[in-house]
Structure formats: structure tokens, C-alpha cells
Length: 165
Ligand SMILES: [Mg+2]
Image 1 (cartoon, helix red, strand yellow):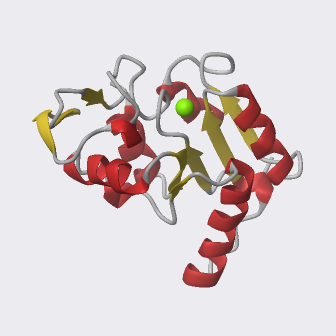
Image 2 (image 1 turned 180 degrees about the vertical axis):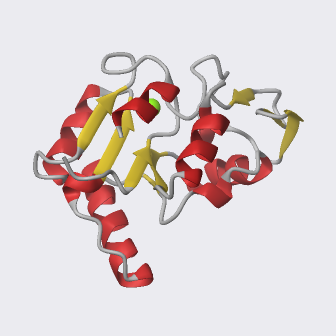
């Protein structure tokens, strides 16, 4: 099996806890950090990072694995949350928009090649999402290669992905 070079995360209910009050793109700016892993928006809505996310991000970084986000969300709101929680620096060529998730994966890979001169083949990609349809879209975009993990089905905790690289 080829080594995984890139992990692409979904945001809501994967990197971010399902106990959050709202999705990333639904917050009302500005947001305020209320503890290490959570923000509260100006309407009182709380969004919390998954409790294992920070550890997993640090571990992937330590292992030299690239990370990106493929999320259907309003980008301005989602990007502010990543920045306020100081995790934006972990991700490269993220696609936070309302495009097809499979199309976003292809764009992420092409950005790595065009902007960083880094060739990442589909079988070197791990993709994690909680929605089955998005996992199917990813599988199609990666031509049946790569490692697709459905949160809540293939893994139940983010840290499990570290054993599957
Ligand atoms: Mg999700």
C-alpha cells in the first residue's frame, strides 16, 4: 500500500464536534474564543473542535503528512473559526465552498501540484467525512483509490485514523 501523503478532512461533525450548536458557516461574526477548543459567536452559538482534533493535527504534522479541508460551508465564517482557534496553519489548499466535494478533491490535488510542485496521487489520499454520499463522491473523484473513512461507520474517533495511515 502506498503511504498516505495527504489527509482531507470534512469540518462539521468530523474536525468539529457534533455537540456544537451550529455548523461553521452558520455562525454570526464576529466570534470569540471561550476556551482552547471552542468559540461563541455574537448570537451565542457555540462551536467546539472535536476533543481529539488538535492532537491528531499535531501528530500528522509531526509525521510530515499534509492536511486539507473539504467542507460545504460559508468560507468567511468557517475560516474565521479556524483562525480564532489557531488551527488554520495546519491546512493547505482547503476548499470551503458550496461546490461538489469530489470536484474540490480534484482541485486540492491540482493546487498541490501547481502551487507546491507536489504530486499527490489518489492512492496517497485519505478522506474523512460523516456523510455517506460525500464519501461516495470522494471515492469517485479518487477513482476508487485512496482511503475513504466514514465517521461513525468506519471510525468513531478521529484518533483511529492514525492507525490506518
Ligand atoms: Mg460533516
